[in-house]
Image 1 (cartoon, rainbow, N blue to C red):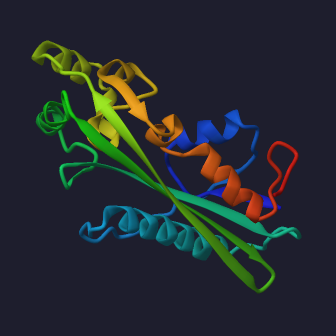
Image 2: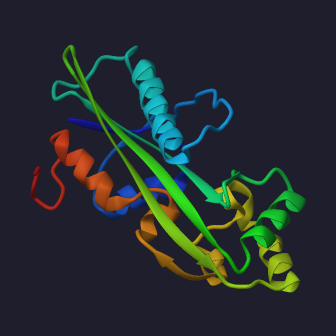
Length: 202
């Protein structure tokens, strides 16, 4: 059985490698329409659309005998009902970091696992939500973090696994969700599709 990661995120790829999974990357692009609330359901739908887009892409090539499992995910940052995507430029990143400073926000990741075997197509989904408490940041700290270049390809303009970890006071929930892929929920979904992790498929 072949595992396919439908994501361009180097962080998701690295997390899967850390738990010993072998996979192939198939980049899936979808047209993201305007955000809808509730956001947790919206990000869940985005993950499904990404999985379906990857499935259409690989449908052009012969499948392996054991079938294929597609893993897709999408992560968003929400504070006070406002959705924070990837910053457009330095000013946008500075605005986001000032907005998050000294406050609590939610990181939501929708995960979808889609299994294709012969003519059978099944999918399973989950959403993980983690609360992140930011320290009160000084203008100097924000400027220094912007100068590092780290904020610009990340929702909410920070990466907890890097220098951005110094901006965070504490979290409530799954750390890996903030990185971009909640590992326990992902493991549970992959097991439902027959992929063994930690010697079990339950």
